[in-house]
Length: 257
View 1 (cartoon, helix red, strand yellow):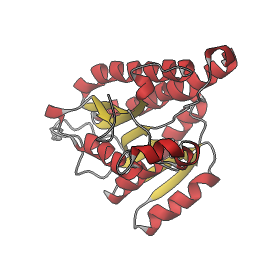
View 2: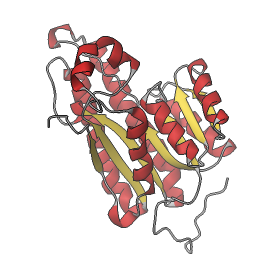
View 3: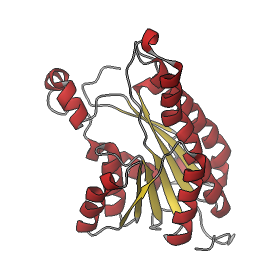
């Protein structure tokens, strides 16, 4: 689709009424899937990205059953050529990207003495470098149109490094810095960049299976529910530009700061 560079277009708001394509980089089984569903229910065609295309088939089918449009893509977000090709294909075959969500985690705890340089580098590639590649490619297309949203998923590690999380925290804090810089550079070009800090446990199979005692102790509404969390991403995308949020902290009511 051709870029819209018409200066008469009213860009007072981000495109809350325009149902352009939304890409979720890291459409996993919990947070990423919930974000994709929420945008699809808003009428956006959604592009779902994981390293394995087969793992996306159930989510694509689910969204289509709900009446939405969904497309699955296999891509290693750490591979520059693959990321460039992904964005190019979406723009040329499906339409203009209106919102891009980077949601790759790499939350791997390991003590500092057990952290090899290879592991450290891989975690940085997944949680920080891949975010840079995704954000840069999104900006490449959005700056031509002077509109769009780029949303990054952060974590507790984005703001403080816990014991045994040196690699993950360094990557997440690096991603936050990338997002901050992009927000300052791209905001004046009508592109909303935001960073969502999830400062709590999220209701996923991994958490429930491995930290059941903590889940039980948290009680009702004590951990973040992916569907409720995903509403925040849609809200950020729909914000009017005179009141944009850069960083949003999300935590359950009982979570200690």
